[in-house]
Image (cartoon, rainbow, N blue to C red; front, top):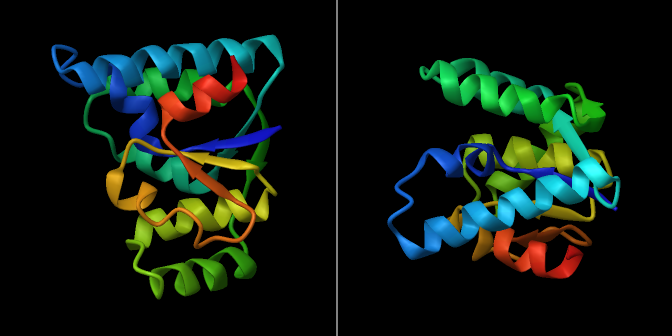
Length: 143
């Protein structure tokens, strides 16, 4: 099963862990990473993630996100199809960068797009076969 992780997923471990939701999402993300390492889940990476990781001003966060890239089995590069789909997704109310991430997930034929962004998750069902899910929900599916 192919899965695409939104950039916010890579950063969750650096958020305030005293908040219950954030702590539980971080635990779920660790479980997802374990499933990726074990080969039960296949990770997709993209040029859009590379851009966001590069823009992160915090070295520790950049290095942690880059460690996920080593686990990926697919790396999606730019294409006309991705940009076209991203424009269409913006018309559905997704922000520009989110639209690009989702378009990369669609291009890779990912089954799931995992995010901690409530704005994205509220639009579940708008992207055909791609399931938009939070890390807790997805971890429950794969563990």
